[in-house]
Length: 340
Ligand SMILES: NC(=O)c1ccc[n+]([C@@H]2O[C@H](COP(=O)([O-])OP(=O)(O)OC[C@H]3O[C@@H](n4cnc5c(N)ncnc54)[C@H](OP(=O)(O)O)[C@@H]3O)[C@@H](O)[C@H]2O)c1
Image (cartoon, rainbow, N blue to C red; front, side, top):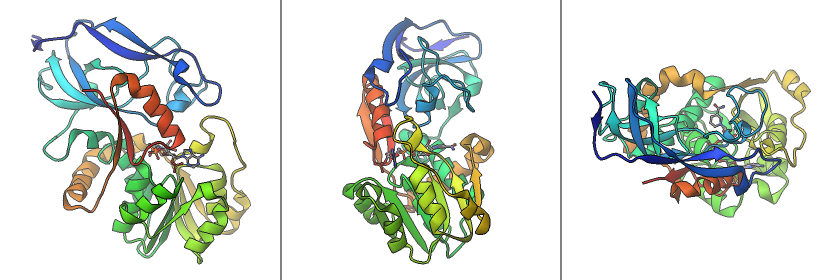
């Protein structure tokens, strides 16, 4: 039996209007209103209250094979979101539950209950489940505990350090016993925040140029671990600064996502002669430890070990602007869209 409260009849959702060439614009998105279908057995209707915009979505706007299929022109976009269940045809997920799911970019979502995850909003405010307690937090944790394991005493370098993954990563590196954690970000306001709020020991502003010189000054004896979110010049400079036996977590390569201003990557011969490990990762491989991570990170949030920031755009119609903003650095911490 479907359990309901007062229900909306239509939902608004973003469609991919056209594939971008280079940097996307508002013209690549279309906001479409559609009737909400009746729930089938096992489905829930969710009123989305928060949605995530993430750099990887840029890749889904292109028509090329990847680890996740491309968005289709004229079809709804998707991504992580959180909301309240307002109708349920699934006994396990009742009306009133707060769930995360993958039907973002819309205000109301019909979701198979089996693909939704109820979250405990007594542990942390709901929006954290799209940030520090969500996939970006898990990415930082997995990168530094498994992919490029931080050992006590290490010098750790983190790029895109004022962003969602990076700001959490710097603090996790310290919690794992790193002796020195260096962050790279764009602009003086962000580098100040790395030092004053996110616990980094040193910060470099890549927009000032001479990234190699700045990193050498911050880590004269080199680095042991690098969490790479940027690729290209950041990765090249980090490989040069690596001590023998160093580890690199290849998490992202945002400098190339728009396919413009690409610069050469690292000299991998250096990786050979320094016996470095460079290892890629996908956060989905770590979903089996998601619950364990959330419990740990919620404790860190509660006791102040982990400090977070959110940059919030209000209203579904602002989702494309928020997404374009995360690609260009308009965010501090996790970029989110508040829908209700
Ligand atoms: N492998 C996985 O499973 C996985 C999971 C989650 C995220 N990721 C990756 O992790 C990275 C960070 O993701 P996020 O969600 O935490 O985003 P984010 O760091 O919150 O936002 C992206 C940031 O990248 C920086 N940036 C943009 N263009 C840049 C450039 N050309 N050079 C240097 N920095 C640039 C901007 O900060 P500035 O103002 O400092 O430039 C921007 O704020 C991305 O590469 C993403 O694809 C991977």
